[in-house]
Length: 387
Length: 203
Image (cartoon, rainbow over all chains, first blue to last red; front, top):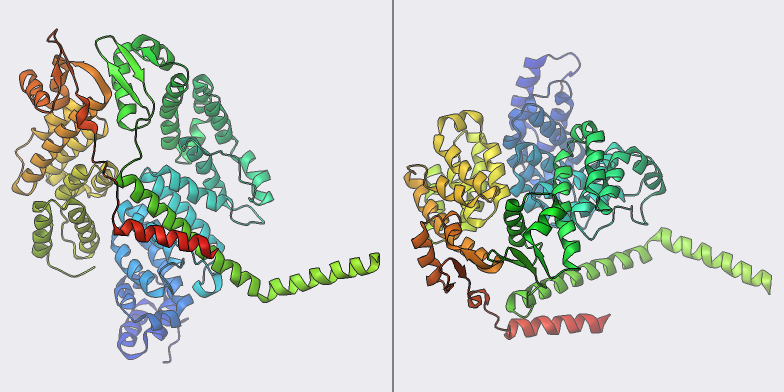
């Protein structure tokens, strides 16, 4: 169809699109819409639902343009403050475009961004629970920015749902992604990575060994406000922590991390009590009030909250005004525990099988075999010269 | 996501609530919320929040409250009252929870869920007290259980607690803590074990 985009005005573009929708194949329509929406992006709203109802071969036929339209659509929806409307069409598009149920597509971070803006965390959680093993860049038109955004938004959603362990995992994925230059997404992920490592008690906030050197060397200095706070937390020093917060309050608030900082300060109380459980079997209300620097009347409610959340194993004796610390009395001897164990073993087996498949793929890859041969030749050459 | 009408969705959700399948009802509410965004119908915010309270999922209910548009919040006082329950649950202010549960003349949609929530909360708080306290004063009980002193004592005595001789303190009896610890010794377990052994052998 003949149409001159550069000279057309808004109305003629719109009438062209409406006419074209019923006459040409969906993949061609998508290509036209991608070009026209560069100038007039409000048209995307009108046609989005119809495009997403097209069959998936058509969508894959014009995959690049379709992804461009989807990205623009989610940006517009966020800017215009109605992200909830965009969730259903983008989700339909995602299901149609992805090649296997465990591939990562550029629409994943789009959808997560919309869910964050619309605050539909449960829906995003459903999406994140479907694990994504397949991140082949070429087949899914994925680029590094999409991957980093996916890790960052995924981490934010899990943090919002208070699943700190998984959130930490996502942010560490972003921090350890292979890099040759620093990305703003990685810097923000690192800040949250540090704070979440404090909330997941058995994780360290040092970058893992396989982080790129660029990241390891430069980012901790950029995020020094956070590493200072983390050091104060590790040393159980409430005064240094409060000092840190007072000094860097603006930075924390600007980065939207103040909520996490507050959570960490609350958790410090728990750490102080846990240290005491290693030494004492019972403590009186007054002794606990001294350790936590609170009033004696508050001790009961604070300890009750810790017991309820499962972080502390203790009993309260109101008559004698003491707390008895006990060991973890859970007997892992029931059906629930064995079921949980079986689930975890199954997951481990699944991951091992994926790793084995990946291993076979790499061994059969042309580049790897080439390198192997080169290596063998040089070794061969060395031993031949030595003899 | 299907395209049912509002009435059908409401009927489905209510039937799930009656049969106590709260998780399914909550998922249906969430789906309906996303679908109704385009059609400008109003999803069942109140029921959704109450379902999340019953399931113990306070963060999801907090997000529902944040998502409710300001116009609807102002129009429907009931949603605000429901969220007042949520705030009390969040802050673990036991007395305030019972107060907020009784603070309003609930509409028909919500009253059954409110009653279920009240009973569940009372039972769970009694279990928490049994786990955490060696002995507790009678006079403290009414704030935890939302009943007056005599009724609270009776409620706990029915659960197996014992009243101390000084008639001031109550002690829990530890039988209530044993959950079913039957070992899983059925076919499923055997087939799982054979799968694991096969896997280990093949590597």
